[in-house]
Image (cartoon, rainbow, N blue to C red; front, side, top):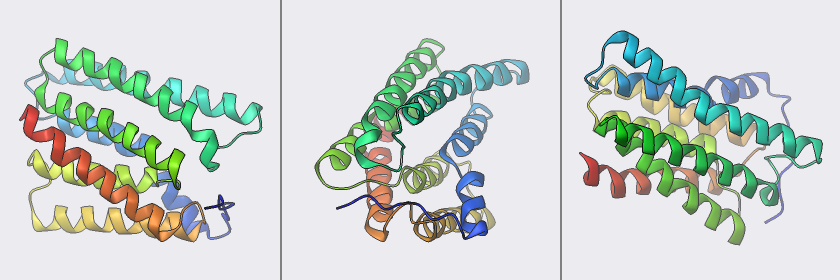
Amino acid sequence: MPDLIPDNSNKIAYALGYIFHPFVLGVVGIAAVLSQEKLTFSEAASWLITLSLILIVPLVSMIQYLKRQEKYTYQRHSRTPFYLTGWLAMLTCMGLVIWRDLPQLAACFASLLLWVPLQVIINRTWTKVSAHSAVSVGFTLGLGWLGIIHTPWLYAGAAALVLLTAWARIMTRNHTLIQVVLGWIVAALSILLTFPLFL
């Protein structure tokens, strides 16, 4: 399947891609899970900053490196170094949260450590997988499993997040419907296989 060339002319869809970006949802998700762990506010804030930096700085650096080589993350065959960088950052975070005995965060990072190889396999053998859509579903299912999303309004908001993210990825031509659905499936599978092992 050839790579789609993104079309960012739909400004609402383009903005939603940034509002519901995996980096944003990742930081919000880490903060939400840390609020459930047995930490003081200052400890939680310190962990949020540390884990966010470990995840985001290497990934942004890799994106910039790829751009300098005229490779972009929307290109299917340019994604492997990005995924490898992210996986190593996630593995580092996993080691830290296990060391600190933060079981809910360990479950989250375990799901990410499974999710990335699944994305890579599909990406290398068949088609791109929407990371935005995968993260929106992983965010929703993970926080639901942990009881953080627990009211009808929160469930409705989470459903809107997933659907708006999917719509934005399709409207900006970053992904096809099948690539979005594959993101949902890979994320759900990762949560369902890892969370029972940690919680």
